[in-house]
Structure formats: C-alpha cells, structure tokens
Amino acid sequence: MLKSRRIVPSLLRLSTLLPSCNRSLCVKLSVVQALSAKASDKDVKLQGWIRSVRSQKEVLFLDVNDGSSLDNLQVVADPNLGPKNLTYGCAVEVRGKLMKSTYAKQNIELHAEDIKVVGPCDPVDNNFVHIHTPIITSNDCEGAGELFKVEPANKERCEQKETNHFFNIPAFLTVSGQLHLEVMTGAFTKVFTFGPTFRAENSQSRRHLAEFYMVEAEIAFTDGLEDIMQVMEDLFKAATSCLLMKCPKDIELFHKYIAPGQKDRLDLMLKKPFVVLSYNEAINILKKDAHKFEFKPEWGHDLQTEHEKYLVQHCGNVPVFVVNYPYDLKPFYARDNDDGPQRTAAAVDLLVPGIGELFGGSLREERLHLLQSRLEMLGLKETYQWYLDLRRFGSVPHGGFGMGFERYLQCILGVENIKDVIPFPRFTHSCNL
Image 1: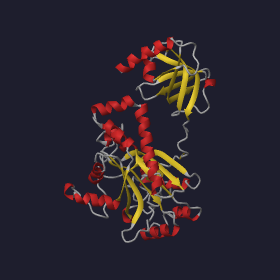
Image 2: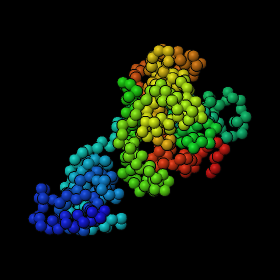
Image 3: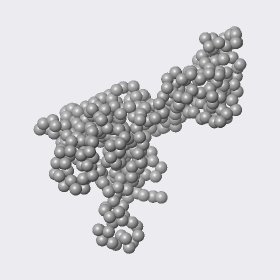
Image 4: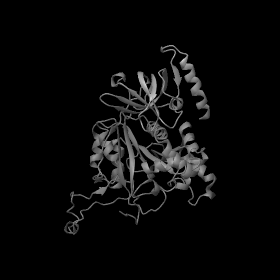
C-alpha cells in the first residue's frame, strides 16, 4: 500500500503535463491507485473485471476490480455507453475522469467516457438449466441414505391403515434430486438443482446433518467419467474464485481467527490440477500405512473419513478424485465398467483437504438390459419401471454428481464442525426452533 501511494502522485503529476487527452496518452491506473487519487479533469484508463452491473434509466453503475484492492472502484456511465455484452465477470477497459464520489463507501469514482469489453463473459451457467426437483418424493434414490417418511400430522389420518396413504403410496423427504434430474436430461442435455436434502442417519459427527443443501447436476451425451470430473473441478474452482473475489473480508475473518493458513491451502487447491487415483491405487496406498487407521483398509469396503483425509495429504493436500469403486458398493444406477473379476462401477468421489468427500457422482447405466437385470436381482424392477422406461426411449450415455453445500463452506472457511456453517442445524436428537 505504501508503494502505491508514492506512485499515484507521480502519475497525476505526469497527467498534468499531458495535452487534452487522446487515446494513446491516457494515464493507466490500477484500482488501488484510482481509489487513492484525487479528482482530476485529466483522462485515465482502468482495466479490470466487472463485479456488479446496476443499470438504471438515466445512469449505469459498474463495480470494477483488477485484484490490486479488496475494494471495487465504482464506474458511472450513461446507459447508452455500455455495450450489450456488459455482464458480471467480463473484462473491461474504461476511459474517463476521476470525480469526487457521493457514494458513502468511497471518495472517488470514475465517470466513464468510453467502455470497451476486452473479454466477454457468458452470464448463462454454462448452458445448464435450473430444475426445481421435488422435496417430497416416492423414490428413495436407493443407496443415497436413510429416509424420513412423510405422513399427515392429523391423528385420524395417522391411525388409518397403511394402504390409505395421503399420496396413495409411501412418500419420503428427498435424499437426492438425481433421479428427477435424469428425467429432465431427456429434454435438456445439462441440468442442475440446488435445494434441501434430508438424511435420517443416526450420526452426530462433525460432517453429517439431517437437513442440508446440495448442488446436483446431470449431463447427457457423456464420453466418459472424465466429463463429469471436469465439471466438478471447474465448479469448485470457479465458485471458490468468485467467493474469494466477491467476499474477501468475510472469508478473511474466518481465515484470521478460525483457520490460519487456510488461504494458502485454498490458493494451492485453485492453482494445482486435481489428482486422480483409482480405488485400487487408493487401497494400495492405505495398506502401506494400515497401522495408522482405526478401520483397516480392505478392497471391497467403503473408504472411511480417516482414509479420505490421508489420501489427500498423501497427494500433496490438493483435491483427489477416487474413481472406479467396487460395483457392489454403488447404487443400481452406477454404470458397470465391464472390467473382469474385480468388477467396478464408473463412480467417482472428490476428496478435499480437511473434509474428505465433498462430491460424489457416477456415470449412469444407460444400457437397458444391464439395468433391468440389476433391478430384478435387487427386487426393485416394479418400483423403478418408470426408470427403465427412460432407457427404452431415446436413452443416451449420461452422468452426474452432487456436492454438499455445507461441506463446501467447511472447506472454504476452514470450519471443523459442519453444524457451525448452518444457522439452524438439524441432527439426531436435536431439532430446536
């Protein structure tokens, strides 16, 4: 900051030597320099990324940041001056004059005379369609978790026979919107949902809640598990970069008082490519230090939290994809890899430092005969007849994933207990308010 304060006066002194501005002679300022400068009738140039756009009838407001300051610089312009592709996230070059601001949070603002979009940013979420999946559902998304059953609170109804359900069939609070998203991929190739999910697991651990939020996505026409993994990595890095840019002071508060060093860990996660391990490789790594674990690592068993955290540390504290789990560990919809005696499914978990599993996903079994035989073996063919119909009519290779939002907040903020990142935590033996 001291260095920038020395630079600004010299730049402004230089500007006083300039004739009336032409495009090649405008003084280039960073955001931190502009915020420290005084109002002037000399033309300046600012380059950065748009953090907000507020367009009114007679005036256009932009918040611009170039990474040199935690604070944004407000740009004021005529609405007709702004290009049509002026959206959040796009890179811009703004030319104009620094004027005294009436904005309470800063003394200076840039009155734009020319705005140029250097790098456009598509505001649509990578062409994913947002779907509101139901909270009450008749499917249990087999394998996703224990269910809460939905019944009327009316005493008379509760005493009715089991056959007289409110919905005519048993209904539950959703554990996942995945199966509904699969339906929608028959019309839209990329869909996602963000909403509450419920798990009736008897756990008071630091990483489990009975009610939490999930981001879930489903993608049609996949070529392999790598397609799903790429979306996972892109989502994590894009969302985290956006948070660090838009809410730096909030996150800094946690990193300063709750989790010192977490900022450096996040920077490492954003800069480094994620590691990929097969389940076989993961088990072999764990077996070399099996004496360190409470639960002995064995092929065919789920990875425990202690295993997941160890794998992340072993790989340099960057997120780790573990792929191709044993077929019998995964739900009926996970795609069979057809890989011989050690049968595996095209499933993936993303493990992150300090948390363990953050994302879980898979390719879905699109081949009717294989899906049908597995449902028959599990005695679920009649229950999931509608799901089989999805494969009979225009089925395509597809897959998807879910990310627990509260676990994501734990990862970003460095909070150890998941109950501390949600205002009203719900868990076994606790439902206050």
